[in-house]
Image (tube, rainbow, N blue to C red):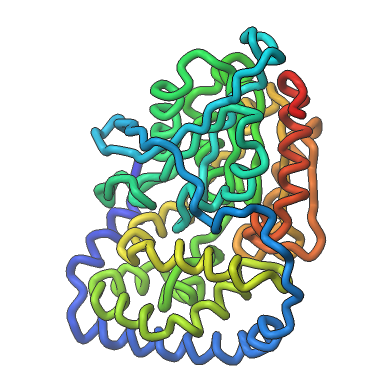
Length: 371
């Protein structure tokens, strides 16, 4: 449900005058200058990165499966892909098979962000990936449906369509973790029966101001400095915004590195994230933006207490700070809590090996061992 503030915010953005748009565009330009100064050290760090070998032969984001379509409750089509379990004698019977993993990505990303998890677990478990509404290859949503509660209903539709019978482990990053908590709020009876585990990576259950979220593109990358009203007004000038994002792409890479990662990483990782962010229209950012201020689902964590849970976050996360994961851990004392020193928000790339190991431990707690 969209609250009164959101309705006022939405109405306001449709009456913005061109002069106001230009004025806020000027504010945006000033914010760019602030970020340029702040990112100078990031430029130097980028040049000094010790290259880690990317642990798969496939280029980042190239792993694919046959497209599947899931129809949400508002008739929007969601793009999904399923990597099937390799059937061997060891998993010949259903009771011997590990649960299906369903991956839920974060704001302004797409299902490709799970590249290293997909590569590591491919064939060992059945995996479902999908693009959240208005992201990736999924359909563009009506603005009023761009809410965390709607994302929870979308996840329910994915489960009903692609995992109707098997036990499920949910894996969410950032807004994807919020989506899982929304589902727990809506379908608490599924946790402990249909849903047998959950991984919450770099996420929050509430109290996360929209202004704290890292957003894609320029001026998206400094929108955390601006108010929701300014973001709404900028959304009224999509050509101006998108032109600015393209013109400042080099700077954008530097800022992406600073906000997405906690330390030096291979340039391929930064480019990979930057491409996903830049592919998200600024209008989509504006549609979801006010919902983060309204999001508060701490009571729903009671459902997650019924299943083995993993909480993982980088200590240097600037988007969903570590304090949010710690607060969730206080309400889920039996969860495994993993804090990765020096890691940032895109920990699933930056520290993929430790994330994959933690996911494997979670799977072992919920079903047969993954070799």
